[in-house]
Length: 304
Image (cartoon, rainbow, N blue to C red; front, side, top):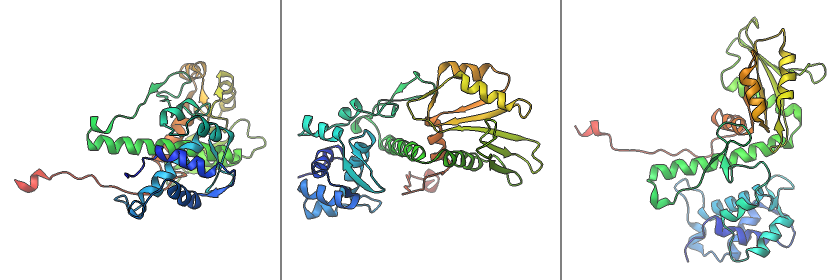
C-alpha cells in the first residue's frame, strides 16, 4: 500500500470527526492514520526536513477542510466537523478532491479558484497546479512554496478577523515598520480610537516628524468591497495634514474606488487582503520560518 496523498486523507479525517467530538490535531492525526490502515513503515516515513510524512499530509487535509468550512477550530489546535463536512462525506464517501473543495469555497476565499492580480474585485487570474511530470523539480518546489504561502495567507486573514480592530491597527503599523517605514530615528504610533478623525496610525519618517505616513486600517470581512465613499472620507481626514496615505484592509476595493485613488491629487496607496497577507509573509509579520531548504547546482568555476 502506498502512502495516501493529502487529499486522500480528507475522507478519513471527516470519518474520524463524524461522531461530533472535538479532537486535538495530535489525536486527529493518530486516529486518521489508524483508520487509513497505515503500517509501521508508513508511520515512520519522513520528509527530508525530518517531519513525518503521514502527519504532514493529514495536517494539510485538516487545514484545507477547515479552510472551506468543513471543519471548525473551536480552540487552537482542535477540530470539530461541521454540517458542510458531513455533507461532503455523504456525497463523496470514496474520495474528496481539491476540485470538489473549490466548489464549496467560502465567499471571498478566491485563492482556491483564482488569485487577484490587482486587488480589485472582479480582476482575476486563474491558477491551477501543474502536473508534476510536466514541470521541472525547481518549478515543483516553487509551486509548493506558493501553495503553502496561499494557505498561510488564508489563515492570516482568519486570525486578523478573529481579533479586535485595535489589534489589526497595531498589526498594520508593525507591518509598515517591518517594511522599513519609520527608520532608525522615526517612530510609529496607533492613534486613539476616539477622536482619531479617520486616521488609525501615523509613522514619522524622521525624528522631527517632517515626513509622515498616515494609515487607515479597516478590518472587514474578506467578501466585503470597499467603495469610493470610504476613500473620500480618508482623503478628507488627510486634508491639511499630508499629501498622501495608506489604506489597508482585509477586504477588497471596488473598481470605482481604485479609479478614484488613481485620479485624486492626494496620493493613496491601497492594500487589500490579498496584498496585505502577501506583505506580512514577505516581511515576517505574524509568521515564522518553519523550514529552510537549499537548492544547489554544479559550480562550473570549480571544474575549470
